[in-house]
Image (cartoon, rainbow, N blue to C red; front, side, top):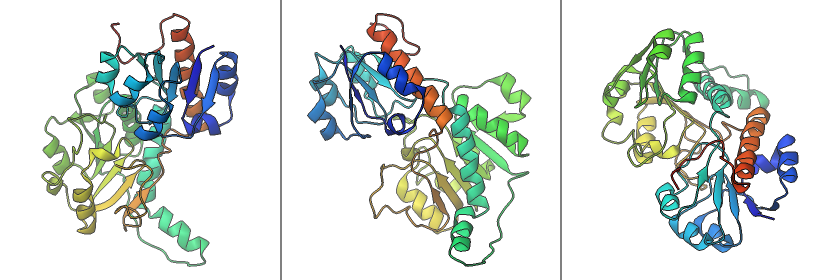
Length: 320
């Protein structure tokens, strides 16, 4: 019986059929509350045939210690930046993932954050709950220019909703679907600095890679329009933290709304916590009952297929 380490908390905490599917697979499952650090993973490495993981630190050192027993890593989700994929490939450890399961949910959360930011919803709700009838004037988004950075499934879902809100759309990314862009009247911009100059609202949906780390940084953040809004439901490290904090304090950025941070969970003294103009949620963009069920079922099916000698739904490092 394969022994599986399951670390993702939304899988564990959300009721649904995925629990029955995992039980029916016949695995010996050990539960841990992730995301686990490298040191925590090293303590467990070598005891499991497979990892069903979230955003745990799967470094080369962890993977080397996991061998020869470890047969496969099944990522719950699509973001692979916490997995050392080149190391997994070198060590011939297959990495599976779950495409097409959370784009609707993340796009909806993007607009929840955006609207909360421009209408001061969190501040106003807290005022009202405490008995303060204090009304702050907000902003419309209709007619503004939104830059969508990253044109994959999530970026497209955001574009659909942005179009319905009457936003003008510009996009930036290596992948481009011309037919989709034409349907939603979206203009491609190939120079990132020009994106910053054009946009009133920037919505980040690109992968975190060595090339995109600190995509927005101290050099180019000055290109932003005064009073810009940034929404980040991708990865915290897409923005250089010190530059971001300074731009918020100087009011170059009117509002920063994010579901992700450079450090998760953040330390008590993280500079974004409590900063006026900042709206943060604890990486719940894909955490709905519907999305969890899709992600979990796909991750379990990936494991079941692979460990039974069949082709999984999606693999990040094929070829061995």
